[in-house]
Structures are given as structure tokens and as C-alpha cells.
Amino acid sequence: MSAADSEALILAYYDAFNRQDWNGFLALLSDEVVHDLNQGGREIGKTAFRRFMERMNHSYRETLTDIVVMTHPDGTRAAAEFTVNGTYLATDEGLPKAKGQTYVLPGGAFFEIERGRITRVSNYYNLEDWLAQVRD
Image (cartoon, rainbow, N blue to C red; front, top):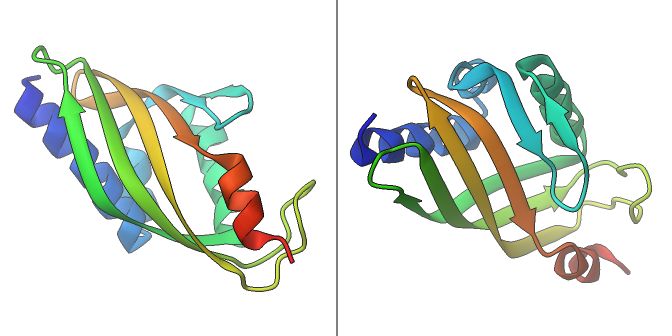
């Protein structure tokens, strides 16, 4: 893939996310996608990614704006920076009680790409910033 193709793939990924088109979103991932959770562990496989998204969609409603994608010239890697605009809908285990709090914070992700599919997603955001915004 070219760098332009990889950029288009990542933009399509975020477009599907923002539209909550979960089938389209997951279709852009390889079956054995590696997902590095922010300040957490690593999950492998599209099934695990789907379960993660189901849990996230239960507790959060998010839209990403100000998306900027940077790609390696050979198209195998990409990075994105964005703003997360969210609402905390339902209490997530181990986190403060959800009461419909809204939040805005910067985020980023790193990607590996092979044969037109995303093979790794590593997400990052400042958890302490998020906690400060949702605490009483």
C-alpha cells in the first residue's frame, strides 16, 4: 500500500467509528489484529476487539474530531492525533460513577498495516485528564 492508501484506510476507520458503523469499522481490521489498550494490556483478534468495542459503547459515547493522520512512506505504519469528545454513559468497572459527564481530551493512536488491513492499533490518551473531567 502507498502512504496515501494507508492514510485513506485510517480516515475510513475513524469515519466508521464516528458513524458508529461497527461492521464497517471492524471490516478494516485483520482477523488477528493486535489491540494495545491505553495504559492496559494487549488483546489479539477481531473477536476480542469487537467485545472491547461493545463494552466501550455501553459506557461511553464518543466522537473524534481534528483528526490528523501521518504515514510512513511505505504505507506500513501510520499514526493519528485527534480530539476525543465524549459522554460517560454508564459506570465502567474500577472508574468513577457515570452521571452523563462530558469530556474533551487529546488522543492518539499508532497503526501497523498489511495487505490493506489494520494489523495493530495502539491507543493513547491521558487517563488522569479524563478522570479529572468526570470526577465530582
